[in-house]
Image 1 (spheres, rainbow, N blue to C red):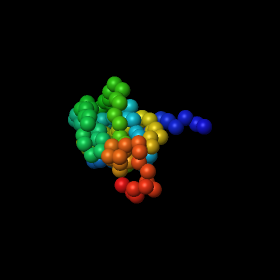
Image 2 (image 1 turned 90 degrees about the horizontal axis):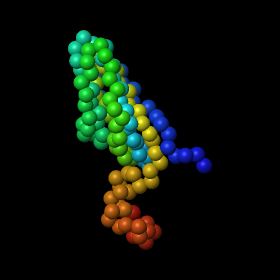
Image 3 (image 1 turned 30 degrees about the vertical axis):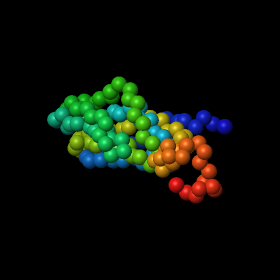
Length: 127
């Protein structure tokens, strides 16, 4: 059986605004890095969002690229990983690992917290 973890590029964003990647149900994304290049004449800022919340940002100097130290940000199944380029001069890439993660969707996590390991869908119906 193959190992259920592999590295991947979640996003490549080459325009202004936001681009999102939705983590598939039953998976968990680990964002390990973001790199950005600013081709413009003025400093611009790149933002990284998890589940709609900005969790990281960095100014990118004019005519330069940045690749910050390694990150470790988690997005669960059905959540989004998003990158926001301040303008069209920014080029950004977000990469990391995609893991098999049963129970990573919010519905499954809530069910597990409410009913624990004794959950029997045939006995009590859907949650």
